Image (cartoon, rainbow, N blue to C red; front, side):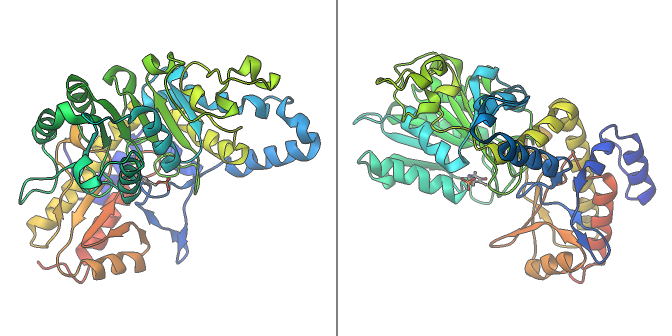
Length: 425
Ligand SMILES: *Cc1c(COP(=O)(O)O)cnc(C)c1O
């Protein structure tokens, strides 16, 4: 891709960008009278236009109809989760019956492990990436203990080679092959929150299955960021949250994928609730759980209408923009940030990008390993109206999201970085 380190180039790219119109549909926080440079969509996505109206509509619906709101109007609450399915299937690369929106992420990770981590004396290990998000580590550790195994023996973490920051696919596959006969579950992130590395999910799934294990993914940093093909990749399950790239607001609901081969099996063990019960019989209030076909059969409770309403506004925007178009811009926009940072690096400063350089191995986030003054650099950026985030010990994460970030944002960030006190020419 051809790039130039000039404002004129950035503006011309924005001009030619067919997705640039989506930017106006998001609310940017302000700093000293102007919009911030927001690079934190990997942590909490910005609020899309229409959220307030969607929430007001449901509050009004409740006020006017009380319990009848479940059955009335264009989007009766009774069926509310179904209004999210086509867009969710698009994000996940799945059939509609393979996805559902419910609960929150870590809760769903536990629910999925209840069904898909069924260890026995011979097969009890879980293979995951070292440095996974802490919630995933705690979830896995507690599941292992719950089944009576010791985390030190049951959890296998794949680590980067000495001197390297990210994992090699061959090392992941080798770990799966080595521990295969004892492995019950391979549970990987899609995109690692710290390094921004996007793992080869198809290869991991295939290797896990060849070893006779189940394979699941936590897609918190992948959903809405990279194009997913969960059905074709043949994953057994996946979970994600909606408040990061999916812009559905703090504590937003979680998405779940269960491959159709499992969704079609009513015998599969699970923790059940009435909303997963055959909907034709849900109100017969009878004994005996009969799960619905598909991921819907894992629902516990009736829909969280207010958070689903906000989620739907954002999902509709993704359906309109489409993941292929977003991905194309994402590769180009993140490539531009990379190019500008490399220019600064060539001029003698101390930024090192630890995110893989290959677009197929990353989404939009770049993780920058900073020099000894990283924390000061981060504070300098904050004082100058940049919202990004700092992860101990010395990484600044920058996520130019294709939905609402511009080439100009990226260019302006590079201007600030060049002027930063830690820049050593
Ligand atoms: C953000 C994130 C979480 C957060 O979990 P919640 O249950 O939504 O609080 C968990 N796992 C990963 C990998 C994450 O990136």
